[in-house]
Length: 500
Image (cartoon, rainbow, N blue to C red):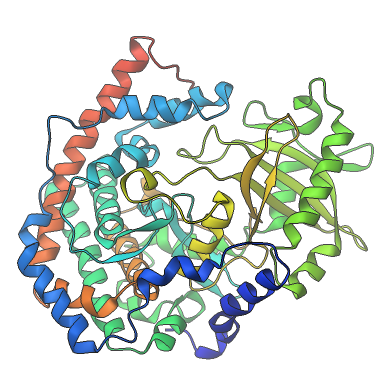
C-alpha cells in the first residue's frame, strides 16, 4: 500500500470540486446525489453482513457459473450495427476491421453485446459504480499528480451504476479469451482467471474491515514495487509487466511530441496519417481551419471551468497550437476524438490534450437511465469515484463545429501511461496482471458500494471463484461464436471492414 501522504489531496478533492462547481452554477444537479444508492455507512455492520449472507441463499455462488441462453438473446451483429449508426461513417469500417483481428480484439469492441448478456445473469442485488468495460487492457499504469506511478483501471467510457458481478465477469472472460489467443492451455487459463477472481474476493474482505477513509487511501503504488505482489513480480517470468512499468515514465507529452509532430515553417504541426490522424486543415472542408482552431480555444476555456482553480491556472499557461482528429482504441473507434497540441506560453514545451466524445453508457439500456444530463460529466464523475487518483486535467465540456454539438471529456493524451502487451504475456505475467486488475476493481467497488455486504456474499471459500472460472470459459466459447458471426457479416457485405 502507498503512504497516506501520497493521497491526502485525493481524499478531499471530490468534495471541494463539487462545492466549487455548484457555487459557480455549472450544474443544476449535485453529482453526489447520484451516488445516494451507495450510502450505507449509517446501517449497522451486522445488518449489512446479514444482507450479503441472505443474498448468498437467494443467489447461490454456483448460479453465477452459467450464461443463460434465452431464445430472445440479442444478436451481437445487430447491436454492433446499431452502435455504428451513431458514429462517424467513414471510421466504422476501421472499428470492424480491428475487431476482426482475433477473438480478443472482437471482445474488446463488444462491450454492448456482453452487457446484453450480463443483464440475463443472476446478481446478488448490490449496486456499485461499474467500470462497464473492465477487460484486462482497460487497466494500466499512469502518473499521479504527485508524480507517483499507480496501477488502476484507466477507461471509463461505459461507467455507470450496476451489479458488481458485471465488472468481475467482464474481467474474468477477458482473461480467458486473451489466454486462448496466446495459446495457453485450458488449465493455465483457468488458473489465471481463478487468481484474478480470488484477488477480488480477498481484497473485498480486507477492505470490509477498513474504515471508508482507509479504503479511500488504499492504492497500488508502483514506486513501492507493488509490495503486495512482489513475490510474483519476476523479471523473467513476468517480463511484459516489468517492461510496462519501466516504460510508463517515458510516455509523456515530450515523447508524444517527438512521435506525433514535426516542424512546418518553424511551427509545430501534428503529422498527417489518414485516416487514423487527420490534421484540422485536412478535415475542414468548407469550414475555415482557423475558425476551428479558434473554436478549440473557446472549448479549452470552457472546459477549464470544470477543473479546480489551481489547475485552471496551470492550463492558462498554455496556448493551443494545432489540432487533429485521431482514431483511438477498438471500442471507441468511430466516436469523435481529437488531440490538441498546446504549448507553454513562455518556453514552448508541449502538452497534449485528448478531447473525446462521450456517448451513453452501453449499460444504461440494461440498468437505468443516467442521472447525468451530460455524458462527459458522467464519465468524469465515475472515473473520479473509482480511481485512486485521476488525471489533474480531467474535465468535460460540449464541442462541435459542424452544426452538431457532442458531449465530451478532456484528459491528457499521455501522462506516464503504460500497459502490458497481451501478445508478449506468459501465463505468469497474465496471472499477475489479472490479480492486480482484480484488486483494483475490488477497491473501486468498495469506494462506491457496500463492501461489507459484498464480502459477506463472497464468503471465505473459493466456490464463487470456481463459478466465475466456469462462466469465463462458457462466455469465451460464446465470444468465439459471435466473432464468427461478425466475420460472416463482413464476408456477406452486410458490414464493411478495413484493416487500418
